[in-house]
Image (spheres, rainbow, N blue to C red):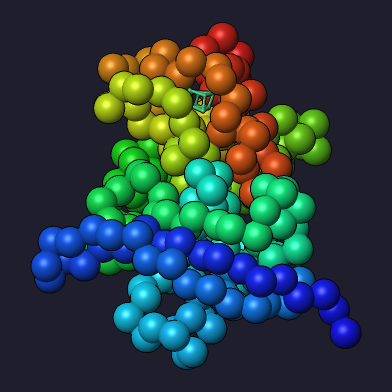
Length: 236
Ligand code: SF4
Ligand code: SF4
Ligand code: FES
């Protein structure tokens, strides 16, 4: 039988109906390989049906389950109890929502507002390069794609944006900036000026202090700060 732990989870809660915020503590015994989403589900079933949280894929692919565990932004669907105990050296965990958008209830934030930054970055080809006559598809060489392939693993969980130490309230944030940098490196994109305009604007990459906190917390192991550094150098 796998090891079990006696856990103490303190959750930062918010009830919008009463505009009330408070800390609530739940105690439970849990197996080593349960994930934090499993712990939240068990709280709902066994202790408190009102605790509100969100997940979708539960396979580390949608980014919806991001929360802060002991101040570290993480995916609750990927974090195992045994790994959390090892990482933090404790069985006591403080769970808070991520900080990139207003809290809707408990651990749920307004994802529409968070995504507004991504919409501003336009993470798609705005204006495709015109293909030569007779050519029907873009050919991107392995060398070209290798430059930004890592960034394509981004799931927009906003863990990096939550960890970001930039104090400028208008900074578009690491994942949105990276999305725009990637399209500047994309040989299919002709619209460079609009992207450069955003990256070098008031809300752009010069609001980044090169702390690399974003890289440090990324659950997809993307060196987010590297892409922002490329933009600062104009190295696309
Ligand atoms: S760069 Fe990493 S931490 Fe940031 S949103 Fe993408 S996957 Fe999440
Ligand atoms: S390197 Fe820049 S974008 Fe990344 S966390 Fe630090 S300030 Fe934010
Ligand atoms: S639920 Fe999709 S990444 Fe966690």
